[in-house]
Amino acid sequence: MKVIVKKYGGTSVSSVTKIKNIAKKVVEDATRNSIVVVLSAMGKTTDQLVSLANRCTKNPDMRDYDLLVSSGEQVSISLLSMSIKDLGRDSVAYTGWQAGIRTNNSHSSARIIDINAKKIKKDLKENKIVIVAGFQGINNGSITTLGRGGSDTSAVAIAAALKAAECQIFTDVDGVYTTDPRVCSKAKKVDQMTYEEMLEMSGLGSKVLQLRSVEFASKYNVPVRVMHAHNSGSGTLIKKEEKSVEDALITGIAFTKDESEIMIRGVKDSPGIAASILGPIGDADIEVDMIVQNVGSDGLADFTFTVSRKDFNKAIQVIEKNKKKMNFSDVSATKNIVKVSLIGVGMRSHAGIAGQMFSCLARKKINIRMISTSEIKISVVIDQKNLENAVKALHNEFKLERK
Ligand code: ADP
Ligand code: ASP
Ligand code: MG
Image 1 (cartoon, rainbow, N blue to C red):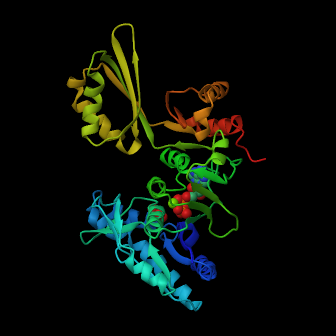
Image 2 (image 1 turned 120 degrees about the horizontal axis):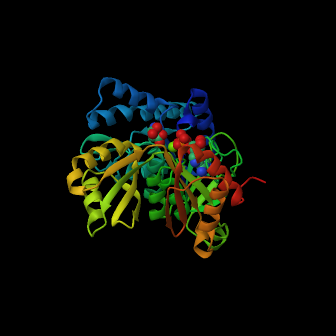
């Protein structure tokens, strides 16, 4: 029998009725395959736990935090196991540590180091349906969590450890769309995608899969299928690049609203200036995304870069603290920007995509603040107020619309 890992997200297990429904589907599939189910917490449980923590303290001890927020998954796995047994099939539910998921000690964003899948393999041999709590693992006796959306990564990592035939990610949409269907109603489901494309989609803001889950899938070559938890359909299959997949020019449009922009004006244009600005920013553990430097005729330069909004205040503090060393005339900053990205492996073999993207935005009178490109993506930073317009215009320009 083939091993299949099935992960169900929060909205898909938000009620007992939905859990019982999933139990039925899983029991049915278990007549053909060996099944491991990975679950998220019910509905908005994790958000509620995070807000409880915030009400107690602004600065929780991260071990306590992980102990708290990992509890949601323990509820959903127990309920599914009970529901499966109620249908006459044997099952066993494990928390992350019981399932042998070992992580590093970066509480709240831990990385999986290894999975000792002996127990799961034995259970599957004994014809049990195995249920594992997503989003969590263990480090040195302490429960850790894998970052928001981390159950996707738990599922793919377990699939890799078991050499599963497929990792199925069940959610509230029928697959990966050309862009977030919540923003563009004409978004279309994509049938197949490469790991590379999905890495860019996730990395550039499409939260349908946690970025790390795609990294894992790509590294261990785990086929991942994103599909609707309660409707039928074949979903989106994400796998290694093959000739046929290459045909699509643009696969999708991703965007992120988590950006902020800092412009440092009037810095002396001399060697080492970028290092003197970005050095202290990096030392403060702040990740810089895009960077632009404009040199004026007076020998002074403007240095602009983006950081995640959560790091915005910290970055401004670092700049103020290092003002003398950085030697600039003034600094301006805005949080009202977004990054929109076009993604597609077809870009490799087609010139002119960037030009077409910029002309399209120009026709819509959308100003581009910054640009960055890689082999298979082009990203632009624009004002937040233009986000929806830009996504819809690009979606139309590159003919991604549903027929
Ligand atoms: P789950 O709780 O099942 O993990 P998520 O909320 O994490 O579900 O992911 C599903 C959501 O991702 C969808 O409801 C959709 O709004 C959003 N999303 C963002 N970009 C995309 C995209 N390109 N394709 C499909 N869904 C997307
Ligand atoms: N329950 C966790 C969260 O809400 C993990 C997940 O759903 O993937 O982030
Ligand atoms: Mg998710």
